[in-house]
Every structure is written in structure tokens, then in C-alpha cells.
Image (cartoon, rainbow, N blue to C red):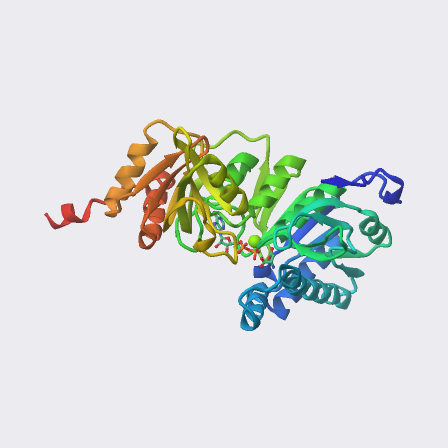
Length: 402
Ligand code: ADP
Ligand code: ASP
Ligand code: MG
């Protein structure tokens, strides 16, 4: 990604990125009702009054993008990609306008900006475009004029001048790219206080992880910790943007993702559903890993590769051509530094809840078990209890009966 750097003449009074400037991204979970939008505005207004200068990035109101996908589906089985992008981008166009209104209502000057107005240019196909460059002149001019820019996440403009979208969950990537262009930190706000050792919706004993490395977070996000979008984490790593995951409506410290913290023995346990196992020639596997979300990959024999794959949003398993396909399964991954005897500990923990992994895959940052879909949550809870909380695995059910 290229940018016109803030030290260029376009920077105006903002000749150097200042320490009190930050990008704050609010996700759909924080913007799902007008009341929540007003609460976000109050939070932002408080920070502005304390002297912070902010660029906001907003997702669509929670559930809105899914509703738009359904609307398109009511008319056609195969919506043209250009028009689907034009439709889906309206979710963020609406939420940013509403948030800017709510801020103005509180006396905070604010301006909503669509992707093209914020200088976000993309390349690549509709539906999963990539941010190629950000021209920050308009953002800097708005900041210099004392307004809070509220930028549409998830959308940009192609070379042809059309609206594009970055793939589901793409607002996090917008926020990281804008932060990189301005040379500042990126704060991602959602309905949880940061990154936990497991999804707190499923695991009661999940703990907040105060800091972790980009590589660990990337592996964790790819394997199911969707609190931060995986493309956003990869972009933050590549562009050296510190990421701070925090709660919108609480005052917790949150989680910092950077390069300079020691690698953790175990970061956490993550689960994915709808995981397919594909096997075939390296080129066919490579193509599918690039087109979908490759979770893990390995060479099983000369000329034969295997990968675990989560399908890109809106595609079906029919898209997996030219390879042998098995699934869908659940995958449960223990993410962290490779530890001795981890395999035995995993097996014992699963055994304790009568779950047998169909397969185990290990790489530098994680060990992943493939399971029947209905066993996913049992396995997630058992592995978290044994490996993170240090509780002994429960005895096998047969042993209890004896
Ligand atoms: P937003 O709509 O703000 O982008 P997301 O739904 O994308 O929010 O991300 C927040 C959700 O991520 C939480 O509600 C939580 O259920 C889920 N999640 C999954 N894994 C984790 C994890 N390891 N730590 C924290 N949250 C997680
Ligand atoms: N609104 C888009 C989605 O639901 C982008 C995002 O929320 O990040 O996927
Ligand atoms: Mg999200």
C-alpha cells in the first residue's frame, strides 16, 4: 500500500503525526441500534473534549450487511459482483452518516466520508478487493479544520471508479490501513474487552490476553478468534501498525498486538466450523488456499498437498474443483509456541470428554484438531480447561460409570 505521507505538503498543520491522534474503529456489534450509536458518540465526544484527535472508521450497523446479502438473494441466485458491492457498501454509508449526526448533536464537528472521499483506492476483484493506496489529503484537511472524520470501513474505489468491498469483516483492515497512512495507532472497539484465551461466548473461564505478537494474533484469527480480522492483522504486521483491541462500552485496558512482546507458550484455543480438508496437486491446492481462507497446509507426499480450508463468504463446497474434498468439520486449535508433550496433553483433555480427534495438524504457531462438527464446543471447553486454566481433564465417562 502506498500513501501520501503526513509530512507531505498535503499534511497542512498536521506536519507530523502527533501522539494524541489515533484511528478508532467501531464494529457492527457497537453500532447495532440508534441507542448504541448515540453511546459511541458520547464516548468519542468525551475523548475529543480531553484533547484527543480522532479519525473514526465504522462498520455497518450489526446485522445490516447480512440483511443486504439476503435482499440481493431474494432477487437473484448470482448477484453481479459490481452491484453486490454497490449494495453492501450502503451499510457503512448509512452508519457513518448516523454516527456523524450523533456527534454533531453533541456539539462535536464531524463529517462522514465514503471510501472514495477518504482517498481509499483498491485493486483486485469486487467482493474481496485490496487497499492499494490511501490519499490522506482530505482526512488531514478535515482534521485541520477541527472536524472528526468518520470513514466508511469495508469499502474503497477501484481504478475504474467503482465502489469495491474488501471481504466480510473488512472494516478492521480499513482502520489499519488508515492508521498506517497517518502513522498512528489503531484501536479496534467491539463488544468484548479485547482478545481472550477463547471466545468468551463459549468458554466461561476465558481470560483477557494483555498483549501478543502479530504472528500469534494472525494464527489465532485465522483459526477462529474473529475478534480481529485476519487480513487486518496481516496488514498491521506488514505496515508496523500497533493494534489495540478494546471494549466500546467498558474501560478495560484491552489487548495490545505488536512485534516486541515475548511469544506466549499458549495464547488461547480457537474454534472454526465449516472447515473442509482438501487434497491434490500443489497448484490446485495453492489456488484454492488463495481464493478461500487457508487455515493450515502441508505436503503429504511428493506432488500431493493437503490444506484445511474455510470457504470464502458466499461460496459453496461446489467451488472446490480439481481436488479431493472432505468435510465440513470443526477445527479446534491450540495457538502458541510449540511445547513438548502438547500432543499428549491435548489427547488427554479430549479423552476426558470422550472426543476423539479425527486428525491433528501441527505447525510453528498452533496444533489443530479436526473433529466432527457437533464435538467442536466440547473440545474447545475441554482444551481450554486443561491447557489454559490448568484444571485436570475430567475422567472418561466410562470410568465414571465403573
Ligand atoms: P465487531 O462487530 O465489533 O467487529 P466481532 O463480532 O467481529 O465484532 O468480534 C467480536 C466477537 O468476537 C465477540 O463477540 C466474540 O464472541 C468473538 N470472539 C471469538 N474469539 C474471540 C477471542 N478469542 N477473544 C475475544 N472475542 C472473541
Ligand atoms: N459490514 C461488513 C461485514 O459485516 C464489514 C465489517 O463489518 O467489517 O462484513
Ligand atoms: Mg469484527
